Length: 248
Image (cartoon, rainbow, N blue to C red; front, side, top):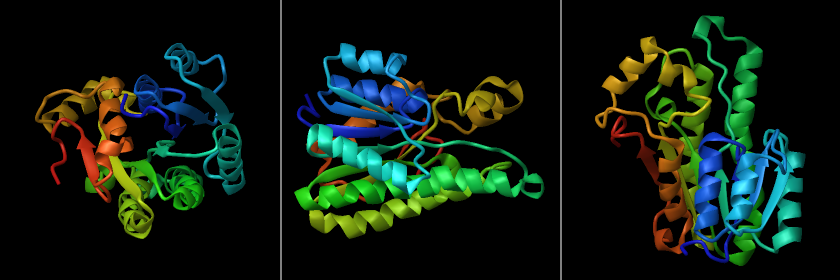
């Protein structure tokens, strides 16, 4: 299996893309640290990973807090002795038009989506640098690449993740660490309004050449590949898993 013997941290792992990627990684042979602000041992994603026969550590972590992210890394190293993969997926959305957006809406989205991504990346980079290997996969979106109406906070955060990925890839390459990014367009809780409301759904589908949204389990194979040794010569890239909506 592509990830046999590897230890992977997955943030935002409770549901949606994070949950689907967790199961894909487990089936590929990885032991997992499943992280979310509200995850518990009884959640379906945890049971699915255990059913796949993999070791799993479950942690409630607010990635916007550096101290909690540090504890996450310390516990992972104490349990498994190493960190091979980070799937940096935690994110939230607080939409509002530019002239209506509150300071709280701006700060919370930037704090989780951009600062949280940086916190996790920085924390795992240190042990990865010592072992001179590792794969980090961040999550941006079409909003971060093209912009979108009603989400200047989310767009700014995800655009930052896209740029952060490139700089981190250049800094960490000398240590054998790859840093890449995916930009998915899947039906999840976060995209529920876009995917289900006819006012938005048809507009988005018109922009997708394949004519549909992805299901979360269609994202996992690309992440597994980027986390595997088969992708060790790929770094600083953003892979759009969106049916052709964004073509870089």
